[in-house]
Image (cartoon, rainbow, N blue to C red; front, side, top):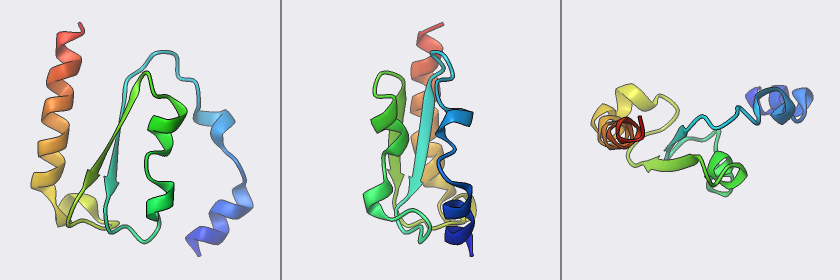
Length: 86
């Protein structure tokens, strides 16, 4: 059902792309059935100068309850790096 909705919506990049120089952290659940491996790093590929993709192992579509520690281990260093840019 979700795949059909995404296909029906078409390319929505024009609505969310190009948000100036804002830094982006893309968290990718390694076992997410809705985001197969060939779709990983989409954001980082589109914006290599300002986006970072991190794959969270042992997690699927319910990322936070499935591997909260993995999320924290990805987010905290990213936030520390962003803080040094202020």
